[in-house]
Amino acid sequence: MKFSKATHVCRFNVGIKPQMKVRTHDQIDKRVPPEIWEQIFSHLYPSQLSRMSMVNNNLNVIVSSLEVWPRMFYAAHGPKAQLRPLMSIPRFKSSYMMFMCALSLLVCEKCFGLTRHNADKLYKLPLPIPVLLPRRSTDAIKYVGDRFDPNWTIRMCLPCRQGHISDLEEPVPQLDLEDRINWNSLLNKYPCAEETPELPRRHFHNQGICELDALNRMRRHFGGDIGIKAFKVSTKAYDETTETRVRWYQLQE
Image (cartoon, rainbow, N blue to C red; front, side):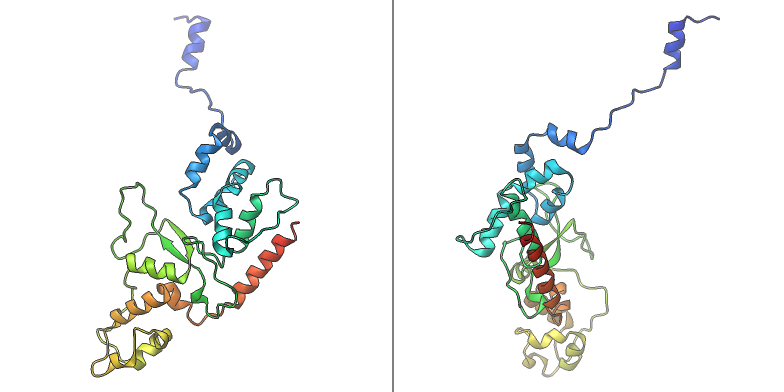
């Protein structure tokens, strides 16, 4: 059987799909109006925005010009504070983002509050705490069984962590908790118990106190397990890192 040239070409191309042209990030970004990007970014935390600004130049311009950065600056430093523009940066608003990123170790991502240098103990500074991001607006934010499955981690100051722990209790750690514990055993296990106002010594007369109850009280006071672990840690390293970042920002002029 003989086939025509056209038939041969058709048979040869059966099952072959045309190769799709790969779009770059820049091409995709330009197809979406900046107003839409701004609406999307309005639902993100500052740390998420800083990640987005690293994707490409287009998103960097959009993210750095968002109103959230000057709002963070004025919330942290007061309504009359002034920020010097960076001469090497094309858009003035981007300097707010750069400066707030330089201060990120001291700024709460929830209330935008600034914890000053020399806070003495690390637990008083904004610390990274996991938060759940609902997939839909109707989803309930909750812990999954006995484990915490975070979608993101943000820095929260001590008051915000305390409120966060009150709303969403942390899961019980995977360790053996005693039913009752005396004062000396509690101090050996949790040195921060001595500075927890909700744990006066009078609780430990007679039969002591429930260890889980004591742990939850310390969590509320220090802002979760991360606050308990940071109880004895100095802020010196954090202060030095922040000073280096701010100095780098100032040298950009």
